[in-house]
Image (cartoon, rainbow, N blue to C red; front, side, top):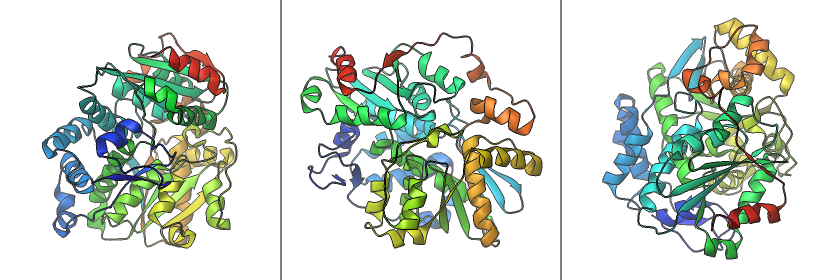
Length: 433
């Protein structure tokens, strides 16, 4: 199995090259040459498998012979060591809880898988591998914890100043060791642009071994496929069409779900639930995509004006908007909608959601109103305590803070101020050589 660039101007890459390069030289994104369907035997029996067994079988089918299968099993076993439970809230509403990992966010699955894969690939390198990652909130915390103290790997996290929650910021800025945080005077798109520019700087890359831990890196995307199977497994006995509502920002999560569907997972339809950063919603309505600067909302991890993974979605559907619309419905919601949804979910189901899950819930609610015979799952992508200043006023109740977040509250924030100018970022990177 090789990986090609969506821009079609870079050489095919091995799995190791795709993972360590992060981005192809032509500024595309890596995609597998083929998405191989799973066997009928697996698709019939996976509801009886453990989460770890599902992860290994899916990864082995997707990656084919690009990695030793014993190593792959070790990686999946170590990475997928916490659950993804589906909770029945009532009626035909279900919540997929993806926040039971170390950073309390869905991105723990990808970060832990990637860290173990990269650690294997760089074990014989004489130079350190430098991971550059832009975050709008949860990616940074997951990557920081996933790579914390991993030998031979150093991590730089770029986050927009004043645009992540307090607890999210503490996850990025208090670990130290091999983790450095840069506080950027801009928005997420500025952080992402700096990272992408570094990857296109050929002179820099000759001197510094760098890779990405954003969902632009194919190894972040692969493990996100696993929990779609784990979710469907938990409602398989209902024997009804299942729709999945995905709170969407950079669209890596939704892309993983589409790949799961292409591999044979019986998902009836996807809902791309977005906030005021509604470029994808407008894309489906108008047939053309126009990126816009991101705006800050209550669901900060979704504040992306120009989602990187849209090119992967287009690639899967051969750039046919009608084909995308045949598989994905999109809805957009503002901050007032989000607050009302948090309150409604609590009052109706006695369930505490986070702002991202609330947007997902609203998208699911709108779809199920038109299709009441379906079963709907919305993704709870982060623990509500990470957004306590938003959730508590909305539901008029205290939200319990898990121990691993509480212990951060007394720690000192350590972050390097950074402008949005690439020259300043490059000076920082040159100090790492």
